[in-house]
Image 1 (tube, helix red, strand yellow):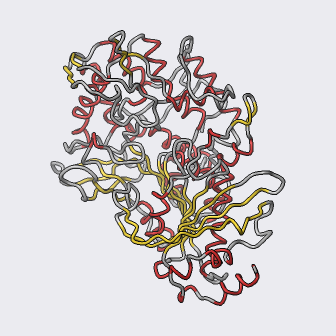
Image 2 (cartoon, one colour):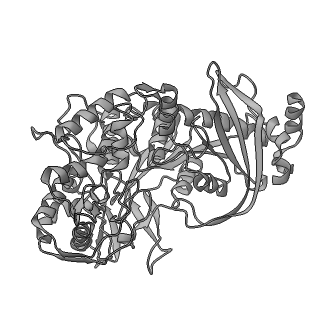
Image 3 (spheres, one colour):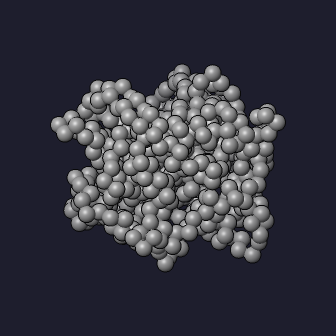
Length: 583
């Protein structure tokens, strides 16, 4: 039967296909990669499921413009030879009349290895077959932590490596072959291969770019690489509050944020509600000036949360009116958090968020019994201590009693050593990527509350220094920009536009610009951004190519991308608490 399927596929040229012709179990089975195509993998042809989708609307997607698509969702399962496992993959296939000889791999967020329909649908709108995987975690909605331990004390290392890099790689290799078979693409026709995702998906993208040569281009946002540092960083604000014995009401932190945005907004030459130069904010704004600023927030029936509190475990009880003035203790907490984690000898362990990021990791919860604001432990940070370091099937820490800055340094070092080859994802030598001709667009919101923006700058700078050690800063930057370009998004939040800085845009068409770079040789000197909020919704703004920084002149009428060494220096940190280099 399989041979018949293969003959049918060859006999039906792609141009003659309709989406209805394509979206059948028999046709999809005929296009499966042949047995032995991927050494060590056996595809279960009987698992193929096809689902036709028509008039599917893409609307309000942060990374893809609005569109209406028709598609066929083809899913199937495979096993690794010698393992008793099941890995599910799915590929959204565009209408053959819209197919543009493109394949797009996608990743996930948090502890998920995929983003569901949100990214694959966008890929279809660009004429690409778009793939996702469940990593073998038990279904497309399952997350890595559900199967990370076989038992207390025993890591499921197959899971760790699938999440680390293997799952996305297998989905990509199988998907590219499936696409070629599906559309009858022969060796004389180019299939362009791309990757796009943000956050954990950004890390997953770099896990591929650092190891393999499967992509012609990748669009990665706010990658959660430097995994050990990144996840423990979520607990740092909690430990600061406990160490200083002050748990600020969320409204007090919001007052600090609002005052910071107001003060730093005009430093870029344009007063528009957006802090485009958080580096100038760090150089020129004194947070002590916020002392005594009044704040007021009405009572709420929901949790005592803070805007942008993604990936946190928050109290869900009612909160009272929050009314007061910004205190010296709150200023001390804020300054310590912004200064970043240091050990007790004063050596830097890691850096923190930019001053315009929401204080999400520092959000507290209200105890109605005591009438006090209390610690709210970051759920994501806690799980990396309990499950990934202590290897206990527990996702929360009940207390941070006894935890010091040195404790956190030890946690980082332990996770770093344990998962250096699977989750850390900071290999800086991209020579193979450069030689392959692949292109990378890397973006990060300057007001990201979940992954410090400086994390992306540090990796870009590490690659520059490792790959071009004998060149000047400008020469090495230009060499790196030939294939890898970094953009810091003014006002941008974590993988999304930011309602707190409503006139800030978001690079909704980054994949389009990537395609233009790869297929037409048009390298993006600036990245386009789209405004999502307020009266200027739909307008566009340019985003400067790092290390250039935006500066408005002519009373805010003209934006230039300028070189400012003092500003650049604020993004560079001496992480001297470790003897190993921190890329």
